Length: 271
Figure 1 (spheres, rainbow, N blue to C red):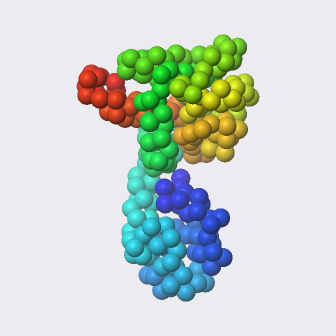
Figure 2: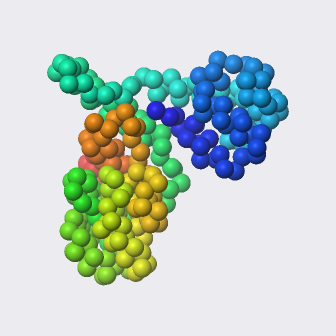
């Protein structure tokens, strides 16, 4: 499982200088070696100068190599606390139970570290100011959308959950710039949902998406809150991803509640 810092390096990779890409490549391939090295040792292993290594760290908003290394060490240690496990047919009930819970906990921590705070803040603003919120989903994602609609309904914001493609299309045609659609998908590849989102945007309504990154749906949404679970959790992924999606929309709900004023019930009421 990659740490938040390693994902930040991947995200910034295309904007790095040639020498800084050497640093990035080494860190992505050998993060534990970096943690165990001094600045001079790390620079030598990477084939760059110490100023280049220091400049790379500052480009990621760290004061220097020492702060960068400390952050990387802390994140690597946190990721090792819980491990994603493959399910074995020979597992006992106790072992299987522990694997399922440890994998789910690990992935929830992984998703938490992935959250883009700027995009989340943008989504909160859109939801808080919406005159109407529609939750669109299909199949296994529909229960997540239904739970979200039930929670947002308590904020007295007109909302509905639609899991039928034809009704989604009809609803999309009635939306305008004051409305928001939340599209939820475990796969991010459902063509009917992608088509509906395009229709929604043609009427100037905003679309917030909860789905894996790099998917057709993520490319069509105005605000993409991407949720990626690890490959090692694939046997448990419907449960794990569903749990992470629940966590994301409840986080959004509480922040909308906080933003819309103290006249609402206590925040604990929505959990």
